Amino acid sequence: MREILFRGKRKDNGEWVYGSCIVVSTGPFIIEEYESTGVWVDPKTVSEFTGLTDRMGNNIFENDIVKADERIGEVRFVTGAFVVHFQEDLPNEDLDVWVTDGLEIIGNCHDNPELLKKEQEESNGQVQSRRQGTHQEKDVD
Image (cartoon, rainbow, N blue to C red; front, side):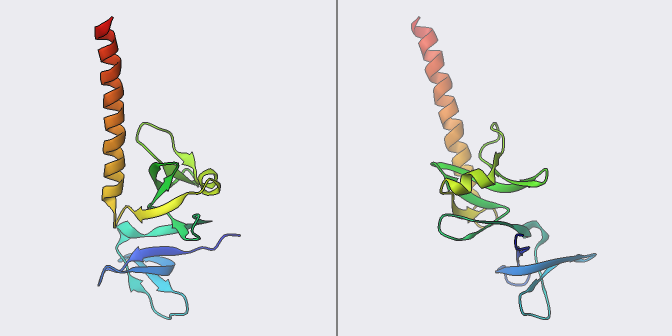
């Protein structure tokens, strides 16, 4: 059985906290292990532990940005499973498969959103250059 663990950024100082998540009408808060009170967290940052670790032994959470085989993607929970979402035009891929292939956490979408934008720009550039290459080949004929 996997450990049930959540993380979120504190509303008062923006630091990450880890523990049990409780959601009430005023929003979520996280109670850290061995603490008797919780701290309020930004609801947009609440992420669940996947039960898996990367090649360095770091816990993988939803919304982590990961790198595998020179590809960068975001960990998401979709239709009852944790997946890696690499690009908008590609299907989600099972997280379990990538963990065994040496996946590494390089950030998260809350602290490092530029990592995903960079990957998207690079993949758009590759598609654009392939289109231009194909177009140029047609012009040569």
